[in-house]
Amino acid sequence: RVLFRSVKNSYNCIILKGDYMFQVRIHGRGGQGVVSAAEILSVAAFIEGKHSQAVPSFGSERMGAPVVSFCRIDDKPIRLREPIMEPDALIVQDPTLFNAIDVFAGLSKNGYLLINSKRSIKELGIANAIYLPEDKVRLVPATEIALHHIKRPLPNAVLLGALAAVTGVIQIDSVAEAIASKFPGKIGDFNIQAAEAAYKLLTHNNQEELTC
Image (cartoon, rainbow, N blue to C red; front, side):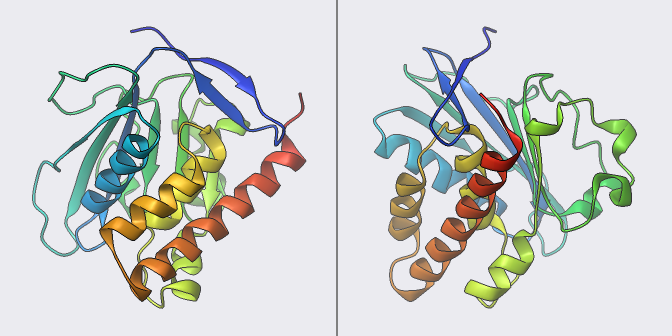
């Protein structure tokens, strides 16, 4: 599989270019909107004129049980239907999963890692499991951001805003439009605010930490 060629935009955020497939795997627990996250991401890519595919989760979706979902984004039609074993981006909505399953399995050495946590990598006890450059790993206080804007501990929209900021594979405006189509009304508005807050936070961090 060919890797993305990358450039940096005016925000020093990496933009992925080329006729290649970008694959995202999302880990969380039942009740955290893991499946909805993949669906929203797929719609956001479609809004931008890309081909996209949200693959349903595999395993139990009962409240609190480990859940995984997948999203593929490409410039050409997507015919794959199987689970993503080698993701280009990995989103972890619940850090307690580190003690339950191997969430890092197959993650590309050129990939991105987004973790819902306000603790450090060392505090999470996963320093030895991560081999990515520091600029490819982001810890996002997604639950806290969600509680502030949505009043519920739902990190999915927050982490999609973070994904837009870190990878540039989708634009935040597309994420907002996709959220609005999934959740019309005030619920959608609150989720959009949460996603935009994460985007601004991560964009600010990128400006401080990355150099051209």
